[in-house]
Length: 332
Image (cartoon, rainbow, N blue to C red; front, side):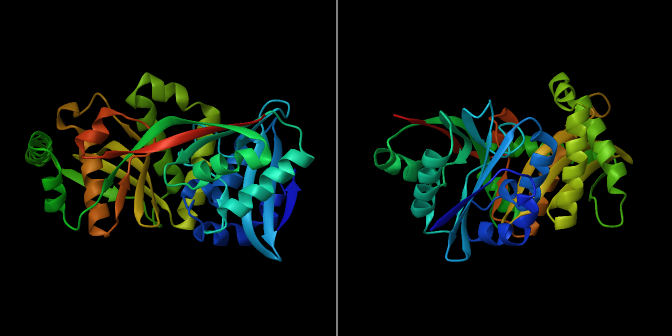
């Protein structure tokens, strides 16, 4: 297995045609590891850091990518994608070759690079990385510490809306039905997805406005730099066919919005916004989430993923936790 190290951003263009082909053949297939997401993240957030992207090839076939960067003068290595913007991260390795790919990457890092810590965030429980690195630590003279970092609540979707409602406990089922009936009774409620006929830039401006209105925390998060990233990310994922930007209209006014991704057999709820003042009694955020779940069921999706964070509202919709891990690797 041949390992190569790249330190310039041009590697993203070099690997563009091969990247996603490898990703769909790996157990780490997620939108946050696509070429589109990774290259865009580096464009917006890579400034001031040193890229250390490793590839592994068996003969000429690309079988592994480790998108790393030096976070603090080269002593700490992290995964491209950061800790706040990307909910799932990992290396990319061809399914069945994870151990060989990781072993080759570790050998190269130990022989060719200066570093103290390899700090891997946002590893999903389904990733082989945790088990592989724990099994390789003695062979490579490494210390590996694994810890629970966060949770990603998700719903395993049934085939119909009624079956979904039956999955909820009695109280939450009653509350959801009550809120949906109340809204339909007291106002004109509509849900729509942004499509190719819409002005995406204008729709994103409205989403960002609702997002910032939602809470002081969201307002602080969505600074000018983050707004630029969100607009570019929306365009990129829209062109790839992954973006699902939806709005709840109450009496013709946009009151809530969900920015989701349609990737594989899942709908991923990435971010949201709502007007906390007008029509608050009609629970526009609940309406938006319910419509989005219902639409996912109609599309025969298998999973509705709320992504990272244990906010209470996710469990009211019947979500169950999946675990996200952090691995800290250091030399013995």
